[in-house]
Length: 403
Image (cartoon, rainbow, N blue to C red):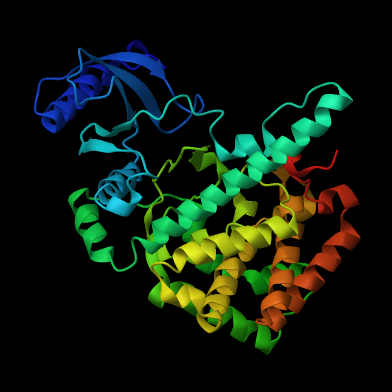
């Protein structure tokens, strides 16, 4: 969308951006519109690449400005998040450089990370077209699998760094959040974890599965872990998925921090075993790779969070947050029982069955939450009896398919 398509903002966004950059570089900055980077036509946010005319020596040639016509308040959380993360030295290499933000019009200005379509993690997992000849396909598939695993490892390592480096710094973030007046949170699923856990017995009842007293106690334990993160309280992205992570062998960065806030680190950190099922890119990851990613994240988190290296503290917390995301998938059950619906690269039914199975496996591995594991197993069995096999099988990422 070009500036002339937004006459109400054209006169405000460019001058505001120029003023912010002039203040940042301590010299007059003049901008002109270069192109639109908005993700889709009806996006609540407009994202422009702006070029600096005759930039000073210490300035880039282009920047990115993100703003909203509707005054969408969660953008203030991205403003606060970027301002906070840019002052944590250990994180400056994995988040966009931040130049400034303002309230009216509501906008943030950050570094231009380039045309990111082929840098997004999802592209390495499921976005590359295979060659047509069988001879080339084997080499292509092997290379693709290595690239995808390397990208996932980089993602998990960066996520662990994000959490480890921000533990104990909530007060700093709160000061910035208050200055940005960031109070209205997004409607993202991360804010519905507790209600989803509390509603799980009702979802199980839809399938004729009752939740025992022990199961209710384990649900209460999961809620308590999430509400009281203790040593796991850290800054979390909130929407840490393949759509919001750019990867290259030399540089990787997170994007889109509208859901950024301090909460239980493992709501992000359960990505490899459970959280990824909520992404529009969700497909199956081989179990061996899931387990390796789990270990990479845990080791990185342990650099700033000793509790992450203590099985007695880490395993219950991990299962609690996994239970939250599993329960979040079960929120789709009432509609999924009537009709399936596609959600990105897979369907709701596929994700629900996968989530129940993943959580059951985790309870077996960690030998914790046995009643919840049994409930999930029973729910999965009921769904497999009702739904055809394709509805119960999450396709594997193309990067990990066997030739």
